Image (tube, rainbow, N blue to C red; front, side):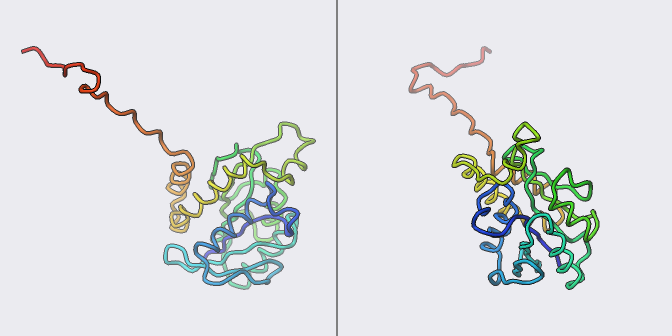
Length: 211
């Protein structure tokens, strides 16, 4: 059984902020794959779901971002889920908006929610890093992540969340590369090839090879 964790801050004040991308994804997964609504448990909101024929748990820690690991640790210990089977969805400033990357283990890269989870269960869990872009200056970071998306960026993020939900069966089946490729293809589909010129419309005769 997998534990899928969306990171964010509780409350309407933060609901549409960049730091709450993880909650947005977990909510969308519950709507698509959930067997029951979220209920309060393990210092968070927990729901059961089924994806690609596998039972999974969805968790949104309600401890505020900096203490997310408390909730993740409690849930993973209770259900005896090893850290390798924990997947955490979170915002990533080092990626441009629209980029989604999966990695296993590593450092927190300044993300306090990831640092807290690693402190409670160890670093060897999978992370789905969802780009929100960087404000450009260190002093603007806190305001950037806690600020709501503007309308254009929110529309883009909604598209990204939908793509992640569509591609989730690949992630559940440990096909991280396939998952990232499918998300990228949905978010940025290839441009259609231009139609071949209509010789009848242009009046140009078809070309013939000389014999």
